[in-house]
Length: 345
Image 1 (cartoon, rainbow, N blue to C red):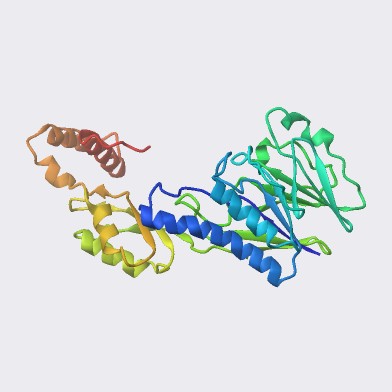
Image 2 (cartoon, rainbow, N blue to C red):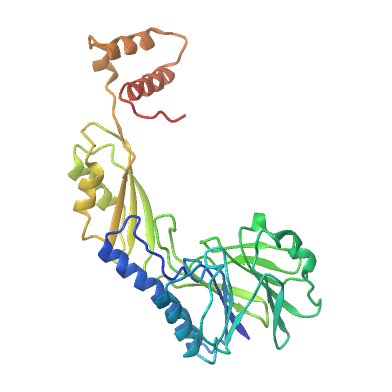
């Protein structure tokens, strides 16, 4: 038997922090599309169980249209059991109509569903029950035991001695796996679709084969959010910086791209991020540029200035307590301080 494990769909997410409204609207529909892709995969591969380990919705009280979408998917796929555990985002989610028979839910106390030789147990974590969760869990040693939880692994109780074969986690938005004990693994499936520039890379879900207890991460992203860092120190202006970026990275036409522009530049970089964004507008679905460049300091020229900055530079250069490299760092930090720019350690 094969089971799908997913989490953190966040239906109803606004996705408006960086995107213009038209593209945010597209991305909202693509979050739904990502969920549809999972269900299509399940049907195509005759998978009868989908685990949803929390944050199916982005809000504790989801909009009616988002709930109607999910419950319609469940009702119209009666051959699949949707086993849904609410997370911290959708903790108050409820349905005002009769729930379909193929939707299984959990509460603040442990509940277990049985499928052949497999048990699927879960509990919704709150401040009131967190401390007692591990003590209240009792799993048979001779079954294949799947446990669903939503939260940071550091916050979860000690579960290593509870006969768990597969701990299906939600809350962390990137796929990861770790050894739980000699018997089982803990798995974060990650989110289905990256919704912002803090959710970089390919997203997807996990397929678990309960016959072998082996699992595989499946790519599912409608779009991928990519991140690059490019040094444009050799550029003479914004357009040259743009050309350097184009030569160094290969953008996915349909993806979102975060570009960190760094290096020391000799030109006015006050509009660098805006300029590059405009030049790259047609290169991908959406580009977001962070300007991390600094102005290249001409120490020799500064030392000849009749000014407070010039006096500072001459004083540092004359101080033999420091090496040449240390003097350059001190001058660089000092000039940035003169300009009111924060100095990193």
